[in-house]
Image 1 (tube, helix red, strand yellow):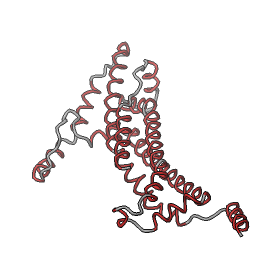
Image 2: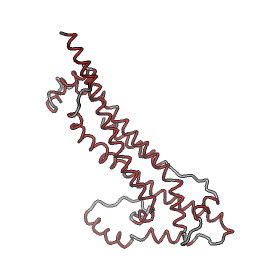
Image 3: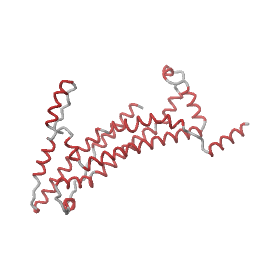
Image 4: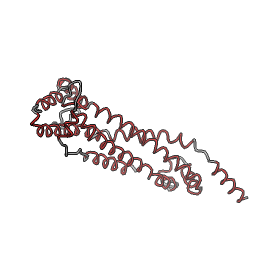
Length: 270
């Protein structure tokens, strides 16, 4: 299961990295985004509006797919875990696990009621973690799309593809430089915005500039989301589910229908 899990995480990360926004932007979209306001509407505000309309919901749907994919992976592990517990008896690895594993696996396989209740509880745990995973990711996306410029200032220059040194002295020496260069992206952004023409007859050029800035900003946000997929999957899906699953299983009770069916089966055996 470990190799399958790592491969699945790699697949969903690649899936997110291939996401893109629409390139068919018209003059009408840019004009409507700028609109009319009592105060001044800058091109930054226009880009934020267009990003929220064109990129936020598509990326949110892709994150929802990632959550569903992770949930489906864990739901497929039920039969594999039962098979592992069944074949554990008599193997060298048996001493590493509880002696009750083979007995409990045989009981689950023989009793359909117990098997159904265990599987239903496990599926509910997966649904709960999916909701938590998507909710936390939605909060992160909302904050990033509401003010992407703050997010950009906290990142290194994307043109620097070299890996940082792992030496403590090198990392310590980089701290002052990183503090001084914190406004580097802000200065680059201001330079891009100054290149926007102010003449209304050059709206075609404005549309191209706005679209270029949107694509670059979306690239920053997409990279941040992709880099955090594995962290979110581990911290807010896998680990909480494994930690709370034992408690969920201990709270399993038979329904009235199951109890009646069990009593009828006992009466038939007697």
